Image (tube, rainbow over the protein chains, first blue to last red):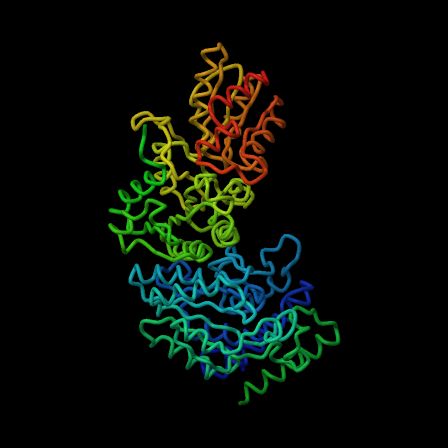
Length: 285
Length: 309
C-alpha cells in the first residue's frame, strides 16, 4: 500500500508523514545539518495543510486565487522540502542529494527562487506580519483565498509577531490562520525556562483572535481545527498545535539537544527503524 | 521660494495614479501627517493601510501585499524605517524580491533639534549594503515626481529618502531631465566636479555659480540614484575635472562619498574630498543652521573646492 494515495485519506496522510520524515532524515544526513527536531514536530501540520486544506500545487502557483502559505519557522525547511517534493514541486532525490551542498538551491531556509515557496524566511517573527499583508490584499480584492503561516513557539518571543497579531485583529482578517508549533523546546532548552509561553490561549484570545488548541500530531484534530477556522467570521484564527519535538522516534522525542543534531550512523539506523514502525502502525490502524 | 516638500510631491503623484490603479496602496505607521499622506488616506481609504507605531509590521505587511500583486508605498520617518525595520527591508523586501517602495520621510537631519534618535544619517550606507535594494535621494519636487512615476513602472524593491522641508527648485515642470538610474548633470565644468544627492544638490549648484564668478569652472552631478550608482557619469565628470567633491546629508562612512571615492580611485584616480555630516550627534539646530555649521552649504562647498584645487 502506498502512503498518501487518494483512498483512505486520513490514515494514508499519517503514513505519508512517516515517509516524509525519513526524507528529512536523509536530507540532514547528506547535508550534514538541519533542524531535525522541529521538522519532526511540524510535519503533520504541513501534511494536513498541503494535502487536505490548501489549494496549492505546481499548476496553481500563478493562480491569484491560490491559498498562500509562509513558513515562518523557516529553520524547519527540511520538512517543507519533503512536503513540496511530495506535492510534485521538485524531485525528492534531488533535494536529498543537493541539500546544503556547495551551490545548491536547497539551502537551510525557505527561498522563493524555488518553486512552491512564496517568501524567503529564516529570520523569526516575519511570517505572520507578511501574512497580514497577504490577507489584507485578499480582502481588498475580495478574493476567497486563505492565508496560512506556521510559527515556532520560541519564535513568539519576537516582538514583531505581536505587531502582526494586533494588525490582523484590527483589520478583522478572518482569512488568516496562524499555527503555532508548540513543541515546548527551543535551542537552549525548555521554552518555559527560556521565556515563558504558557497561557498561549489567553494571550492570543486577549488580542481578539479565535483560538483553537489541539494535539498537533493528530490528523483528526488538525483537520477539525482548520475546518473550524474557515467558519470563523470577523477574527483571525490561531491554532495552538501542541506537538512533540522529534516526533516519530523515541531517541529524539522531547529532547532539546535534537533541535539541530545530525544523527550518527547508529542513531540514523534507529530513527529510520522507528519511523518505519510508525508508518506500519499507521497503515494498520 | 518653493513651498511644496518632496513628500507632498510623492503624495500628489500617487493620488493621481491611484484614480486608475487600484493596486496602489499607501501604508503609514501613525505617520500620515508627517508623510503628507493625509489627502491620500482621505481620498482613497480602501487603498490606505494604517499599521500604528509599528515599523517592522509596516514593512512586512507591505511585502505581503506586494506578493499579492499590490503596489505598496510604505511611508515612515527615515530614522525608524531604515533601522527599526532594517531586517524586514532586508528579508521581506530585498531578499524576497517584493515590489515594495519604502519612503523614508523627514530624512537626514530634517528633524533638527529632536536629536539623534530622529536623525537618519546612516540610511544610505545601511540600505545600499543590502543586495537587491535600490536607494534614491531625489533633489527637488519635480525630480521626485518623475522618480515615483518611474518606480510605478517596475516591480523591484527600493528605498527613497526625502527631507521634511520644502527645498528650492533645481528643475522646472517643463525642464526636468530624468532617466531612471542615470544621474543628471545639472551643469558642466572643467576645474572641479561636485557630485551631490538629495538636499545637497541645490547648494552644489549655488556653489558652482559662486565659483563661476571667480573664474572656476565646476560641473554638478545630481546623483539621485545612489544605488544602482551611475558609475559612467561619475567617471565622465571625474575625467574632466582636477578635483571631485561629494556632498551629502549623511554620516561620513558608507554614503555617496565613499561610493564615489571607490569608483574614482579604481577608474580614473583624482583627488576626492567628501563633505558630509560628522561622525557624532549633530549640533542642535534646524536644517539650515546645521548645514551652515558644518559647511554643507554653497559657501562651504565653494571654499572646499578652492582650498583643494
